[in-house]
Length: 203
Ligand code: ADP
Image 1 (cartoon, rainbow, N blue to C red):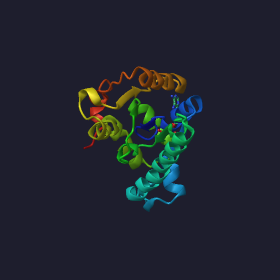
Image 2: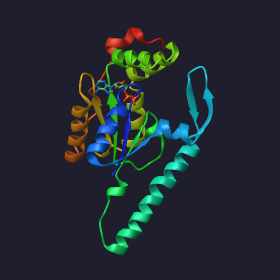
Image 3: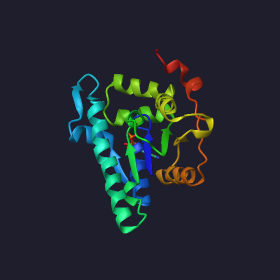
Image 4: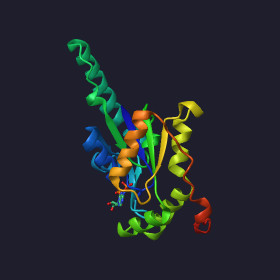
């Protein structure tokens, strides 16, 4: 199973993904970490203190990493006549995970009250601009819309599941993810910050 966990920075992706992967024994790929460590970026945007991701290189990385593993596994399985899919159970975590052209089984979009995201990003020491850009992205459903654009073929074949994490503990959120995966009952569109936060927007 290949799962993307996406959402605005500060929403809790990293925390939730770690708990999920520990419990479910999935391999975790943290995009931010990979981009930095493998230098899969064009440059550092000093004004936003972030990296301009080289998506071609990032896609190449995952192609090698995931699909060559799958091939190896398939060969091994055929040889041993075993059906061991464990090595193919992965979570790719990051707010750009929906841009990687990976054939995910599920895209989990985490959401959180914008005020809470703002507080978390302040604690992280982000600049005012960067905080505003991210809070606005949460208000405008950016990660959800991008995920739906790529992974909702039609109403019945959507792979996208949205979870409001506001005031929930990581364990509860992980349980909601598990429930969605086991029942295959996915939903999105219930979270809406726009009315409450309209005045925050400058665009
Ligand atoms: P992201 O990976 O989406 O940027 P993080 O997982 O790094 O977000 O979480 C941002 C901050 O919020 C961290 O300090 C983390 O401890 C805290 N946090 C994450 N999820 C929760 C939660 N469900 N409840 C309370 N605090 C949380």
